[in-house]
Length: 187
Image 1: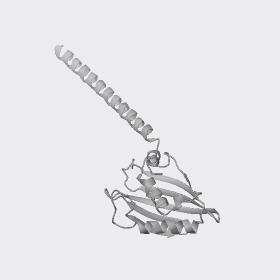
Image 2 (image 1 turned 90 degrees about the vertical axis):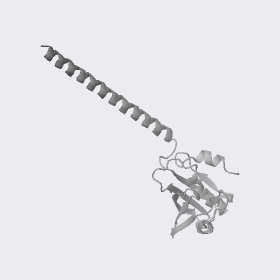
Image 3 (image 1 turned 180 degrees about the vertical axis):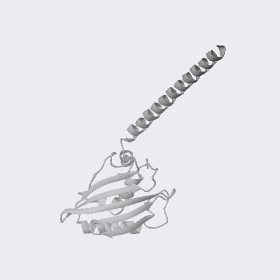
Image 4 (image 1 turned 45 degrees about the vertical axis):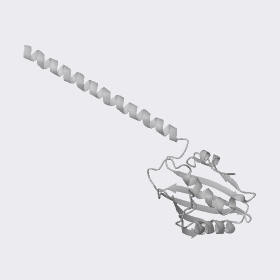
């Protein structure tokens, strides 16, 4: 009879251990889920991958806008980057009708971003430009505004941002770290 009682106590202890272990696994899974939701909520202020989408309106014909952007990309295709400048390592991939495709490589870490500009003309003297820059690095979430700067530097370098009718439209939801980057740009 003592042997049966020992066996029963052993089963009870195993059952209690198994129940506690199951509860610990459930609590751990819930904690991981809560953490994951917290991280996603924190990132919800921007894209979940380093990228930027911007719309510009410029009071210049699209042919001229295209020429200025293409020339600036070519000018900054140099391998020589002065100081901490990102105004180098651009590469013109293609020009097709109203689309310009390019890449930019960051000078230090050599990350590559894909850039596209789509130009459309609501009237002969105005050009609307849809710009998009996306990091090729699958793991990139935050980029210190690099994808925005990939395009804005071209707008500024080409003189397009100095046009009296130049307007820019984007947000932190469309452009990784846009607000903090834009705030730190010189006037």
